[in-house]
Length: 142
Image 1 (cartoon, one colour):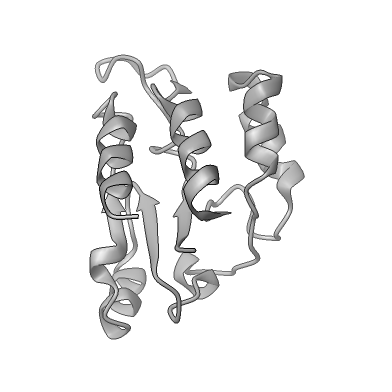
Image 2 (image 1 turned 90 degrees about the vertical axis):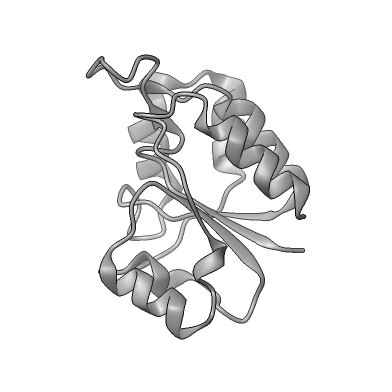
């Protein structure tokens, strides 16, 4: 089964209005996570859990989620990493990495491993229905 690595800020959390500064759960976030959990091995790649703790992710997302979403969030595995999120990606596996912004070092690692096409850009702060597009993309090539 293919892996999918998911960021939080700009992916699961975004805005309901790109002109607003108010952070909100991204539109279609719950449906997106349900789809990912049914079709992929899911992993968090977020600055909100560099130590591999799911509890820090839960604490960060708490204001935006209900019990059903929390259950989905807990089913996704966090990872330990230091500087580059790509340090916690298994390049021997097929994967998608859903992320709003990658660092140049992360881009370099993706290129080095021939996996740049595995990076799927979305920024739900600007593209409020971005998860629908991403879901269609990763759904069409499972």
